[in-house]
Amino acid sequence: MQLIDPLGLVAYLGPVAYPLFLVLFLTLVQIARCTMEVLGYDDSGSQLRIHSVLVLGALGSCVGLLGSLIGVQEVADAVAMHGDQVDGMTILSGVGITLGSSIFGFLILGIAAVAWLALQWGAGRTSRPEAQMYTERDIL
Image (cartoon, rainbow, N blue to C red; front, top):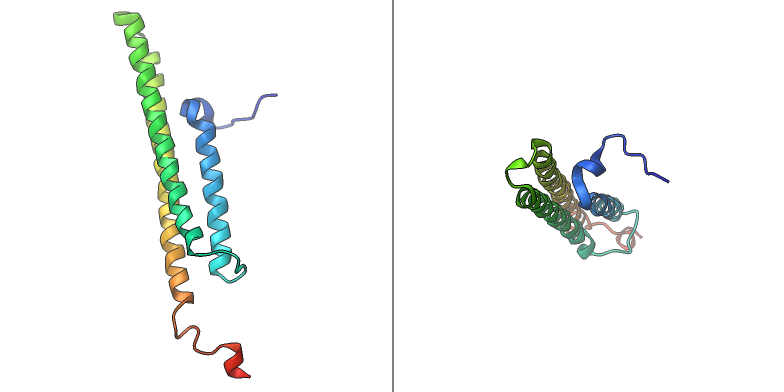
């Protein structure tokens, strides 16, 4: 069974495509969990869950950097094996993996960083003393 890839991202990102998609999925799930927590729908988490969003973003950029190194290694191996007879498509394929995985990894980091800032701001607003001035037991 072959997975459907309408954008060709798997081929473009090279061997780190699936790890990048996994990190992106985990980051989006964690952002959703933290958003529910900050909005008050779930009280089970802690401030550390918000920080885990940023850690997942950093993991995404590290996997993207790994893809960059793999792409450079593919180009270097092709040049070493074939010398002057390396065609341009081989080199462009390695450069494509290098750029694509780096951009995708840093995109994950950017999404995580913006979400982390928003979640930090939201958590700070809900924990202010004036927001907690009137609790239920004060009213009763």
